[in-house]
Each structure stands twice: as structure tokens, then as C-alpha cells.
Image 1 (cartoon, helix red, strand yellow):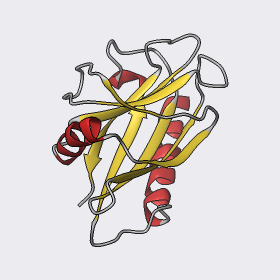
Image 2 (cartoon, helix red, strand yellow):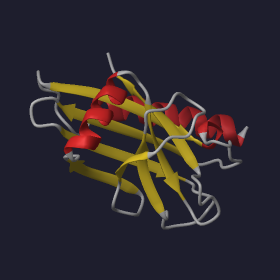
Image 3 (cartoon, helix red, strand yellow):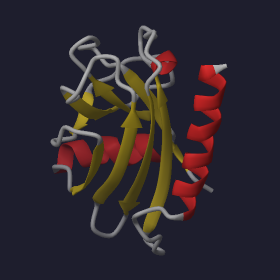
Image 4 (spheres, one colour):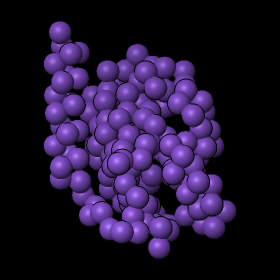
Length: 152
């Protein structure tokens, strides 16, 4: 019962967050979302942690802005690392494309990848072939993961 209540509250939070997304959509921007949990990690983890990420890629400036929030890491706080990986389908591991520098409860930043990474990132993002994951002390390979998918 605890898990289903938590899942419902997380879903409600994700819906509200969509309504109040931190980055305004512009004509040159593409918006993406990721719902993170342990079941999507490779291999899956037993973590009850959940997360949601919102991403905006500006096709004119080649800047990727993101806001990732998460709760209940079993590996403790602070998280030890966070990344955007790709290209990869769900359940498949891939190289790190973007290192998310801050640790803590939420990640909120913009990055402009180098030219080599940019080409791969842009193509993979648009095809839904990137994922975000959060690492912790108990799960150094990643505690939660979510595929970054285009919003329509």
C-alpha cells in the first residue's frame, strides 16, 4: 500500500510539475521528460526512489537546460553522481554524454555540449535514445534511471 500511495503522489507531483515547468517553451526549443526509478536501471535496482526530469533543448543556441528532482535515495545523501547517457534504448547502457555537476536533491542547470557530443546528443534526444540516471553510495552504477522522451 505504501508503494502505491507513493506512486500516486509522485504521479500527481509530475503532473503539477508539467504545468509549472521551469523552462519556457520557445519556437526553437524541444521539450523532454524523464520519469526515473530503480526498475529502469541496468541491471534494475531494488530502490524505492523516484525522480522526474524536465529538459529543454534550444536548437538555435544548442543549449540543454534541465531540472531533475528525486526523492528517497536508498544509497543515502548526497547522491554521488548524475549523468545523461546515450544513445541507448530502454534497458541498454550507453556512454556518458553530459555530466550533471551538482549533487543534492534537485539538479537545475544549462549546458552547451562540445561539438562532438552535441551531434550525438541532439540526434539521440530527438529519437528518445537518451536517459538520465542518479548514482548513490549503495548503487554506484546508478540507483534510478529514466528514459528522456520528447513531450508532445
